[in-house]
Image 1 (cartoon, helix red, strand yellow):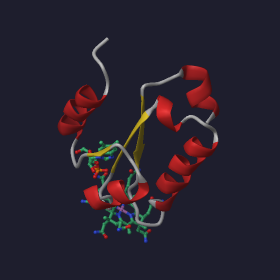
Image 2 (cartoon, protein in one colour):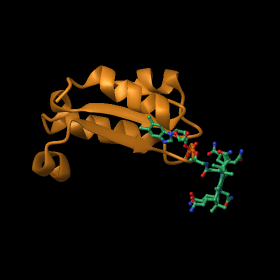
Image 3 (cartoon, helix red, strand yellow):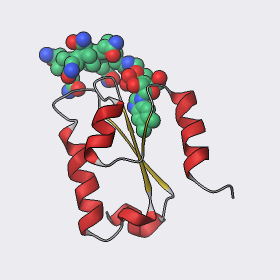
Length: 81
Ligand code: B12
């Protein structure tokens, strides 16, 4: 939350390699909401165990299973500079 406040990013990306660490993505999105920061950033998630359905379930803005599609996704979500 401190980094979002300080650096004011347009996008926050999270990656999980294990099902065990996936729940932290939900925790982070909830923390953004509680800090009043959720509307300031787009949240993208990915990683081997992560699915599009999980992204929808936890309220992420986007999901991709590869890096190049992720770039296109960011371009579609963030206004051009
Ligand atoms: C390499 C590897 C390891 C290495 C990791 C080395 C390292 N320092 O990173 C080592 C040998 C240490 C390891 C250990 C373990 N591993 Co391992 N490992 C893998 C393996 C073979 C490849 C992972 C990888 O690096 N892929 C390459 C990267 C680039 O791919 P990626 O993360 O999926 O990312 C791509 C996409 O998912 C997407 N993406 C990723 N993140 C994001 C984020 C955003 C925002 C977006 C848009 C897209 C996106 O884009 C990327 C590029 O295309 C996978 C199997 C697999 N094929 O996935 C198992 C795997 C992840 N491991 C697994 C397991 C169980 C473990 C261990 C728990 C084993 C153990 N009992 O000790 C430990 C845990 C270690 C730990 N603390 O995390 C399981 C996880 C199962 C699960 N569902 O949780 C897997 C899936 C293997 C399996 N089928 O059982 N592992």
